[in-house]
Image (spheres, protein in one colour):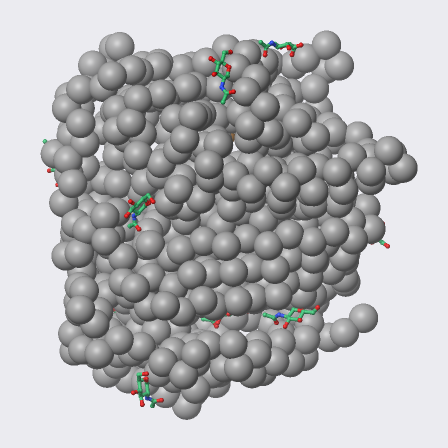
Length: 573
Ligand SMILES: *[C@@H]1O[C@H](CO)[C@@H](O)[C@H](O)[C@H]1NC(C)=O
Ligand SMILES: *[C@@H]1O[C@H](CO)[C@@H](O)[C@H](O)[C@H]1NC(C)=O
Ligand SMILES: *[C@@H]1O[C@H](CO)[C@@H](O)[C@H](O)[C@H]1NC(C)=O
Ligand SMILES: *[C@@H]1O[C@H](CO)[C@@H](O)[C@H](O)[C@H]1NC(C)=O
Ligand SMILES: *[C@@H]1O[C@H](CO)[C@@H](O)[C@H](O)[C@H]1NC(C)=O
Ligand SMILES: *[C@@H]1O[C@H](CO)[C@@H](O)[C@H](O)[C@H]1NC(C)=O
Ligand SMILES: *[C@@H]1O[C@H](CO)[C@@H](O)[C@H](O)[C@H]1NC(C)=O
Ligand SMILES: *[C@@H]1O[C@H](CO)[C@@H](O)[C@H](O)[C@H]1NC(C)=O
Ligand SMILES: *[C@@H]1O[C@H](CO)[C@@H](O)[C@H](O)[C@H]1NC(C)=O
Ligand SMILES: *[C@@H]1O[C@H](CO)[C@@H](O)[C@H](O)[C@H]1NC(C)=O
Ligand SMILES: *[C@@H]1O[C@H](CO)[C@@H](O)[C@H](O)[C@H]1NC(C)=O
Ligand SMILES: [Cu+2]
């Protein structure tokens, strides 16, 4: 098949053309170094003042207010089953438009984003989720099979439309079976203000784990033996394996500063990210701008994002430096741990780095320290909750001797052909036990969720449709630790780490009606039942769903299932 590097280059060119054609003239054609660079699409936002954004700025409360750009950015995506060789080893992959990662969705804060998706696979349904996107009153666009829609059948299409009410860095990925880690993922880059200045925006940088077998091939091992040790990892879709493949490379001009938008899109790897001899300035966690802080090593869980600024001020030390994504050995086994690398070149250098592995301590996959994550837009959590739950996380083997995860005593199991949204529209109020529904019925009520585990396995907890507040987390049981809950502008984001043998306390406010999934972002765990869903203000969901759109997708799926031999071996999400 096609040489992947050529495919990527072709793709980049094609993409910039398509994008230039798509964006209105008021729009920047993109920030990738390949595309013509125009870092500022809004008056006043310059290298020396990233805090402003036209009539808005970094202090604007983006939960209430959003710029009215009048712009709709439109993308046409096609799921394709292709051969890729991101590290020189050929493998089958399911992709958006043939590339891994797929095309980056790029928009300005306030734009409407419209994604037309065609499922050109022959043997899989699909759905596309825009991770971390708040989907403010647009639950039907959240793209979760069994929750907000039926899977889109092979040959069928769907269109997702949502408003970029937040800005920053994220990713989209399939929410059907393990398909995201078969390759159906790509970046989301929403331009907006920032809490620190920089010269150049390098764009999205994915951190992934990778295996020469597909995740579907590995799933039965995961279900019977536990998580498989993966072969290697990729930085923005590329790495070296034996004599093949190539490193991710980026060039910086000495004296300038560069923004990188890190996304952990791994199936089951917590990364410690670093650039030899460089300190990173961290300016956002998930979609939430934070007070900038410096670190040499960044601990990033699955589904999490960090925006960092790298100051290219180390040309005295060397001309080339290793960029490293090291799986934290406490929770992530990998056969190529020391060699998931990229290269930072200075100026016109093209050499191979000789810089050495830094001395650092792993932090047991705990993620960045809470007290470093101080949201710039200060918002307190409700000092008490109208309702709360305390849920234990456990694992058991079922009667077929397969591992299933439990949260709050339930292992999640929902039906592809009977999405929660359809049940709400049909006014079926008695959700099945295995659909683990937590109803939040009162507008703007606060809800607290305590999650705890006695197993030494950390879990990245993700909630759809909301940023949530992290009130506490730590070692031991919640009862024995009896932590003080921090409601005064605590870290706020959409993925938080539940520490191994520890607890996590989060708060959210019922300000966004819909059926929202809450789950562990480890691929195997999502599939093995570590999920629950909030059904928030369900009466208000009726108006926000297009019943015809929902029904058409389900009809297509039902027809496909009748003819094909489709077996749901997972939780349904
Ligand atoms: C960048 O975009 C701004 C606003 O649209 C425009 O005025 C300016 O000419 C552009 N600069 C370049 C170098 O394209
Ligand atoms: C979110 O949606 C609600 C209901 O339509 C609207 O009142 C609010 O302004 C929206 N928020 C943003 C930031 O657009
Ligand atoms: C993806 O492929 C479709 C056709 O298969 C094409 O119309 C579209 O422009 C491509 N999109 C991007 C962003 O490259
Ligand atoms: C990473 O890959 C995506 C998809 O190809 C691309 O849009 C982005 O510009 C790349 N990032 C860098 C830093 O090259
Ligand atoms: C992708 O192609 C492979 C090889 O032809 C095939 O075995 C597999 O079922 C296809 N997957 C999907 C989802 O269509
Ligand atoms: C999706 O396709 C892969 C092959 O590409 C296959 O292994 C897997 O079973 C399919 N999943 C479903 C749910 O159809
Ligand atoms: C280089 O930049 C970093 C980050 O801004 C800073 O902490 C460090 O002191 C600088 N080092 C030198 C040698 O200028
Ligand atoms: C560069 O990093 C290496 C490894 O951590 C360290 O030994 C060396 O002292 C550093 N050099 C400078 C000039 O900071
Ligand atoms: C849904 O059913 C409940 C009783 O089960 C009823 O009170 C309510 O009016 C129904 N709502 C709609 C929109 O049909
Ligand atoms: C409750 O669930 C059962 C089985 O799922 C269904 O047959 C019944 O109609 C439901 N009852 C109501 C009132 O929705
Ligand atoms: C609460 O969290 C914020 C953000 O991390 C931090 O600045 C603040 O000091 C914390 N307050 C307490 C009482 O721990
Ligand atoms: Cu998990």
